[in-house]
Amino acid sequence: MTMREVAVTAELPGRAVEWLEERCLVRLNAGVQITDENTLIDFIGSADAVLTLLANPVTDRVLAACPDLRVVGNCAVGFDNIDLVAARRRGVWVTNTPDVLTEATADLTWGLILAVTRRLGEAERFLRDGRFHGWALDMLLGSGIQGRQLGVVGFGRIGRAVARRAAGFGMSVAASDVDEHANPDPPARFMALDELLASSHVVTLHTPLNEGTRHLLDEERLRLMPRGAFLVNTARGPLVDEAALVRVLEDGHLGGAGLDVFEMEPAVHPGLLEREDVVLLPHVGSATEETRAAMAELAATNILAVLAGEEPPTPVVRPTDH
Image (tube, rainbow, N blue to C red; front, side):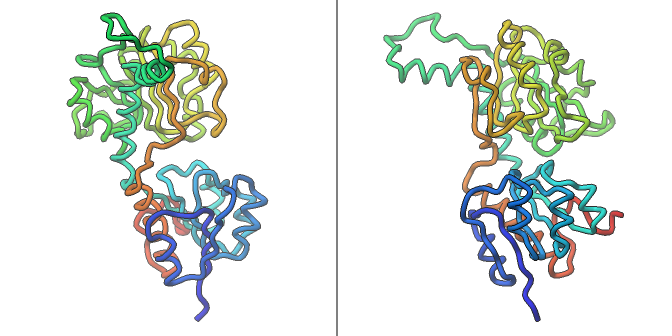
């Protein structure tokens, strides 16, 4: 029996590659990250499956050029790098890796909330630059969050995990993008997005990126937020109009922003790079050894299930979805 061929677009932590090699012929990209269609087409070739990262553009053109492809196993909870409509039309499975990165991303979100409200990045630079000459009552004063409202935009797995942690910091929770008749865990007040923005001291984004959510926070909505409020984004960069965010920060309307993702990633708007009131991280929301290994292993498990004619654990698109 001919072994199935799997193209893996990057080296992976954990046992994912080992599991694939036990049952398939594996072609592993150990070089530069693949970020363009032509390179991805050449790399996939006649493979039956491809294990992808967010940087890999699985477009309709890629899918058309790789007709032997049966499954795209995305090593991420998001899948905005994949043309789902084209995959469905061409009968290609698409899977993702939810659940396993929820807690790590929620922890990182709180790291950003604390860093931006308490000016931790600025304070560390202050010390490292040799400007700390002793304690002072008015030195590097931040903003307290106790008794304030946390606005969670997108109340899915990660949004709820972030909200569960809010009680430990004495914050109430408002949530949008959720069925108002649901019984959420944890409890939250359901609000329309504009109401949530206008009443929250910290707004944190956890909604998927699609054509309906691109620039969800434009300048008009950013200015709905109370003066001195804070924005945190660990979801997808294009949810926020970065140029508008820079303008709103420059005129002092917002107290600051904590960003792990960027509109034109990996590029960052230069107006953000120069600001002390912005905390910037290089997309490390799920970056723990345990979480990244679990993501890769789930992506491999999904691929192996499809190639064995079985239902994968976490499908996004099924060939039967026509």
